[in-house]
Image (cartoon, rainbow over all chains, first blue to last red; front, side, top):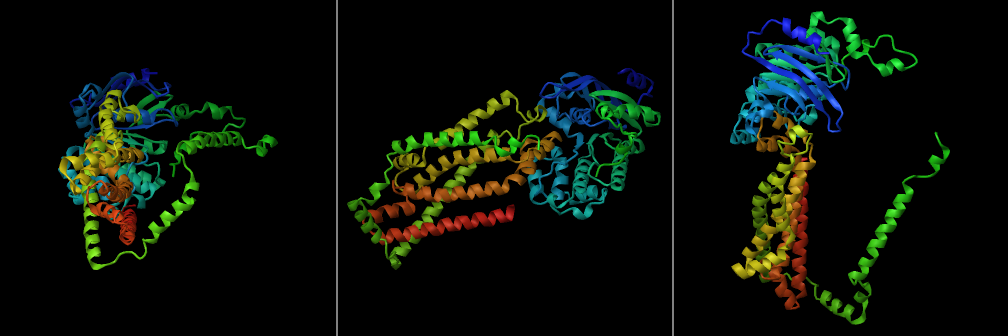
Length: 286
Length: 277
């Protein structure tokens, strides 16, 4: 299972950056019920790299991203983020490390009554003092910064609206704007465009990739739409049943590998097997 | 469609009937224990006594001198309730923040369940809140009347102590009842607990907190009246005097004042909820 990716890691050119943005070896995690969600994950991503994580539903993509966001603790293995091992740090140092990691949630957790500007400015709370955050809650201080982040996603006109007045796709973009405002070194995106129409999804992924490149930030995004992953990301990691099935440059990913990634035993057992299983997955979910 | 008998019989019916019978069986002895006997109310002489007492209520007293006294007592009652609530809030909010599980950083990586040692640190605060609210305010009032003498101060302190316990407990539970994900996302991006509270929890909890606080303020007005009977000032003390003098008209005026105060609190609560919900 780990052979192809080990070979890949070996012949990859050494990055010019001082160290990898993240390094996982033998990482495993089990759900509360004890059933394993991730097994023997080995992954190394250099600073500034952009990686798409694809795989069928329930493969462990979200668990992997949550491990990288330090919102889950691995049961086994070594996890190193931005040159630090988060779970050997003190709680305060871990909170500081978390300010350098930005997670885009599939359903952005924003209080419905909060204004968009406040929700975006909350991205930088980890860097702000308490008095400053309280003042900004009453009277938003960095209006320019929030407007700029929203402007990159075509939402500048929603600055003073309430979050419950926005659609699902707009909320997802507010979540991305918050992350842009946070300006983390490691960007993790869990299905960041799942609530958008195909055109908007492609546009938003373009913005996300450009911004990551411009800031030399590392970007890992899980995506349902394989087409979007192949189009926007130079490196693809295929996850299935809690393991990494393949990890290659996009150009090297073949259709047979994608078919193996998404092959569904249960559906194949049905009396009338569907001819093109990969096809429906190319349609972004709306 | 699967089984025709399934549609005929509600599988929950038997357990519901059983629960109802159980509730009745448990509550029935309660009537006996509390010695509740409604017949006493309509017993000849008792009804007469109550009748004369109530007949004295009309007309409500409205002499200028009395109204000035009533106004003064009402202001004093409002002041006792408000000052008591303010002191209670000063204690309740920090305690609620300490006691709530909603702002746990250790819960972040444990699927929302804080570590046992983090829970253990919350227990002393929860215990303090329980002690504060388990002793009735009237007992505190009696204690403070002895300590600081007759007057509103005793009432203020008594309300502050008891209500700090109630508000702290309920606030902590309100914080836990709102959607935890916004606060968790902020904690996960490096925010501190207080920052996560102000940006993730408070926006969702404001309406509920305001509504409960105004309701408690209303309760504090009533409580300050009860405590007036033991000498803690305000309308209660005035009412105690009027009752001793069998001045039913004065009592009626004061009860009407109460009605107005409660209406006022209700209105305030509605306005605040409308503005913040």
